[in-house]
Length: 181
Image 1: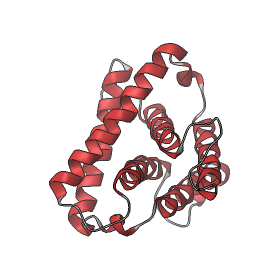
Image 2 (image 1 turned 90 degrees about the vertical axis):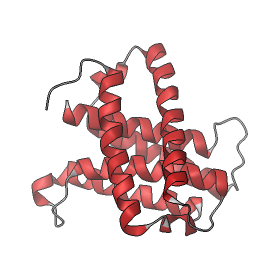
Image 3 (image 1 turned 135 degrees about the vertical axis):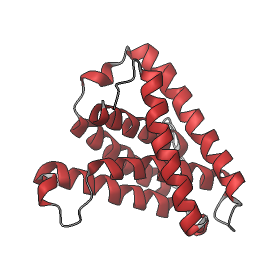
């Protein structure tokens, strides 16, 4: 694979991969995830992040299931986008595929815009980080999210659940860029 020249191009490439998987799974399963409460989405993301950490510690060659770290980071991105949709709409009936894709794009666009703003301020410090650090930060964000969910979404000073999902999307993007490029 030819290495894209910059962060924007790398994000676009990873986004295409994630969106393609989201779209194909939607064709297989519809939007059955719409039945899930946001807290269940958080737990689903947690499972993926814990599996990544397990594979990082044990080594991918020791995995019982023959799937590596990369599909799990893609899953985190897609589940976070679905969780953001659930926060907006609440659990409910299926969405038509066109609406589900439009909402996915909207959520990923918002996360990408946030990343570009932060990336400018932090001068791409993430490029010097380890993939395992992204895993740990995602797990930390999940623990924060679970705590906020336990407090019925109320915070005193901290960002809300949506901000944590958006950060998890971006850390998973960073990890995939580091893995792929």
